[in-house]
Length: 212
Image 1 (tube, helix red, strand yellow):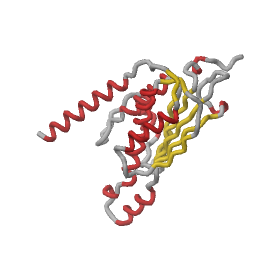
Image 2 (tube, one colour):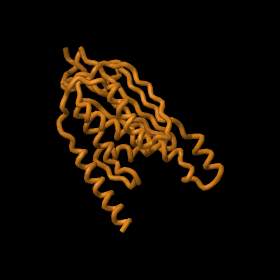
Image 3 (cartoon, helix red, strand yellow):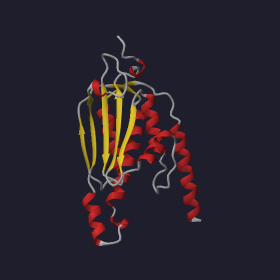
């Protein structure tokens, strides 16, 4: 009975995340990205209180966005990072003293940065009076192979992870794209993964062109 209830809970969790993957149009208002990011960090750390975090959150221009949707996207990305760090720092996955020490030595804090991006580095087209902000979430987890990165970024992807389905990444991607931004994953096996979010402060920036 216990196994069956666990399976039912997992199925319900997957259904809920599939629903989250169909995010509606954002309800836009002027938001402080630093506040949204700090709230997402605080919410996610409740699930991973023992994992260290190093955040560098700069004062950036206000952004026209749906604060609730962006918070959900960041919570999903932070959760992925924390889960990867948990895998890297869990000695129970090792079978001898040497491998245990190696895992503990390679574990590190989750790095989070928020800053303004020079327009020359922008991955989205910007209006002349618009700015671009970038959020980077870097973990030192096991990393992913290139083909897996392409797979999880191209469609909703259900994994066999104990505490997740993989749909959170797809939800985050759709929310960020609905805000005219981009989400990129840079990952190397045995090194870690970096999630790079770029968002224009003006919601309509992606509709502009480079012609003047």
